[in-house]
Length: 452
Image (tube, rainbow, N blue to C red; front, side):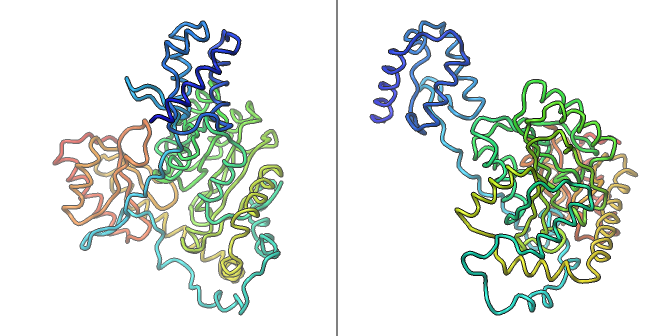
């Protein structure tokens, strides 16, 4: 504690010797700079509001507003009477255990159906007897060609192309290349919990955006951009946890808003592309200066194949790949060769189509059955269905008593209303019809609101 107080005293002395500032924004910028260059570090206590106000000849309310702004941006934290302290990067939350107790049917973990994933045997035999050596290219040419063709088929412009160890790794690297602590990032709410964690760990400020079955609502995005967004992360289809997906009209409406903010970083997380079950529509246009699209092999080829293709504007991708070269270096060429072997199989496109159809049949079995009971649910694409409820814990516990494990929605929400996520990917349609009946009984027994 002594070091913290001595640093704070030095800070007060430095501040007192500088010219009086009249604007809160200038004071906020100066404190942020002290944090950024390391003059103030995590845990250091800032001067008391009245002390700093007197040293700068400012009103205490002005200094208090500066501290609130810095707290909103995740740069400082208030501790009541103890004072205001420089915040560290928040601890990385350990993922909630996805273990499902014995005897429960797993409708919770969000995995693809392992029975619908391709057999790796033939592809593994193509790996060869030697691994890549230092100096090898970051992306195998044949894998790069496949990704380029895949993106071009959906009319996605190819500025630069890169590779990451899965979608989240790609998104994290893109954010690191193009944002700074305190930046505001629009995210879907409900949305993917790991995205929220990534933002908070990077001291970025998540801005929740309302969604419906067609993705982010234009009104929500318009409101957020009117007050300022530095970046936007969207899931064009197979949204986790709701299954939302852009329609052509919704994508066009969102694109019109995005085009008014050409410097805003736009990241599209198309993590389940081949098996999403609906067409791809993008919000990226020629007016978008900073952008990237991420596509993963995890949902279609298997979660352990940590390979995701990235395309985007040249500067963004160059920064991502340059930073990767300094750290991990490259995504394992063994994994790359396995993916190449799988996607080179002549039957792969028909396999993807068949899997997407099966996932669609399963989602629709649940949503249609729920509708018959008057229960609202969303699940246009992907592996999951979202059901709004009044009390998540009661519903989860009730379903467990009947032998089903589902996921409470709390981990996926910022300010949105409660709900539960039900993974439909690995269940037979008849089973999901029974799940709907059970859920209706649980909701009725608990006196929970049902709408539809």
